[in-house]
Image (cartoon, rainbow, N blue to C red; front, top):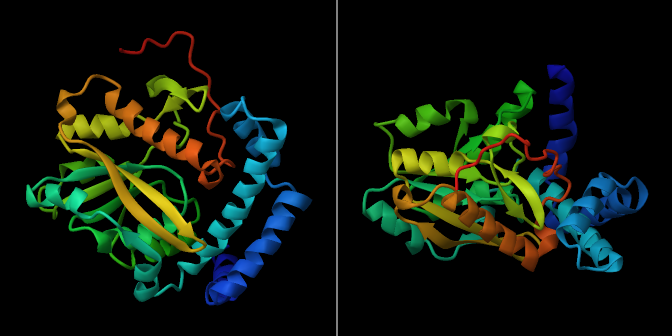
Amino acid sequence: MRFLNSLFYYGILIPISHLPYPLLYTLSDGLYFIMFKVIGYRRTVVLQNIANSFPDKSKQEQLQIASDFYRHFCDLIVESLKVFSISKKEVDQRVKVINPEFIDRFYHKGQNVIMAGGHFNNWELFAMAIDGGIKHKAVALYKPLTSIFFDQKMRDSRGKYGLEMVSIKKTEEEFKRKDAPLRAIIFGVDQSPGNPKSSYWATFLNQDTAMLFGTEKYAKEYNFPVLYARINKVKRGHYTIEFVDAIEEPTQTAYGEITKRVNRLLEKDIIQQPEYWLWTHKRWKHTRPVDLVQES
């Protein structure tokens, strides 16, 4: 299996990664036609998610969102392949933190922070650029891939310009570190939780939604301010990172406040530009347990 993975990686992915951007986007245009028009990759999931999230839009409007999403999604695929070979100079040209002073003020006060965001726009290029754009050491919590080979390649590509990758299995250990530099620990807030009973439940995109509670849990337990990071798409292959909100005293917040606040910020971004969110994800595969008692 390792041989086949290595053959696929070095024989296909790396050569594609070295293609110039015009050719990559020509490939993306072809992928769009195949994935959306021909095979309909997860088309049922995408259309159902969009219909449930935007019930007031017409079927034609929902279909247009789906079409625009698949165009962006195919761009995301080829841009993600590019990260295997992209240079630091290219990263700096294509992704810029537009208000680093927003987060740097916490660094000057000697505070670690949590950076919250979602699968909106290009999170792979975000991973490549974020450590070089802020004073904190950027740390991303992630779920290891089942393939050891591709897990290592993913870690190598995301981390080659400073980002530190930490398995979610070591989250508690990461927060307890005493000898580490000041860190910005990155949480994705829009995955579907594994256990609906330990989730926070609230309305998100017009649907009863199980929300990951880790951001709030660790922010309160270790008193890390929480910042919401937005990824804006300027044009094909060019993005900005913008910090738009901060919860500076997490221990003073009510139960659920942090979770709802960061999810509402993501929801606002999705409503404004729905084509840039990851609609292929089965976000609403859980239903609220009938016996769940949730604090208020």
